[in-house]
Amino acid sequence: MKAFTELLHWVETTPLAILVSQSTYGFAAIDMFHVAAVAVVFGTIAVLVAAVTGVLMFTGQAVKYAMNFAFLVKLALMAIAGLNVLAFHFITYRGVARWDHGVPAPWSAKLAGALSLMIWIAVAAYGRFTAYYMFP
Image (cartoon, rainbow, N blue to C red):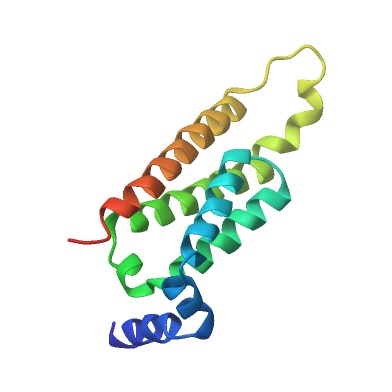
């Protein structure tokens, strides 16, 4: 655990992290792009912008984020969302050709869609909660 904390401290002291955490508008500007990318919700570019800006915001206060309950839940939910996508693409999506012939989508596709929607709503909510758990 000590090595992990030392790694997080090192991340916080990189020039990029210092720019994010100590510049007048750095964090706010990155947060603006992060929220805008999340609001767009679709497209590879939006996902990449959200991921890059999220990592940048993390670098500014890596130790605090690593101890933040809401942030950790958000990360766990994102991992679950990723598993849901993998399960959909490698299991359910294989039969997609049959869905175009007047047959309703199978329950597994509907379940994957419903889970995805619920998980991403929770990710957004815990993303907002993160700010409220930064300071104990």
